[in-house]
Length: 89
Image (cartoon, rainbow, N blue to C red; front, side):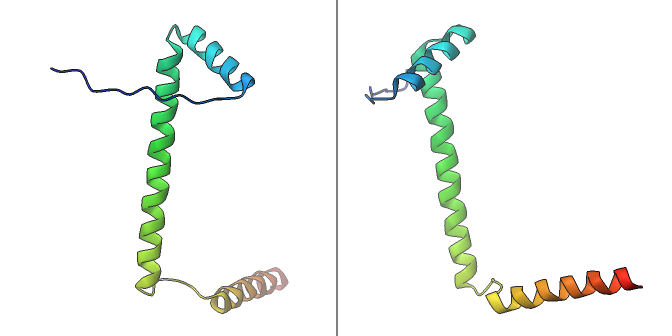
């Protein structure tokens, strides 16, 4: 099996963050590169998931699946009235 192609990415990070990466790498007995790669993978996956959820939400709105502000206000007002009525009973 051939190794995956890789590229070097250079980034300037604050000293404090670099020190934390150093500490984590030492505690885990891993390289700093491994720690950064894991963190970057997680970040990219989370950002992709947020993007996909945004697209789904826009599609849902375009299909008319939403609650208007007025509908939400009415619901909230009725919720308060319903709770108040139950306390009096």
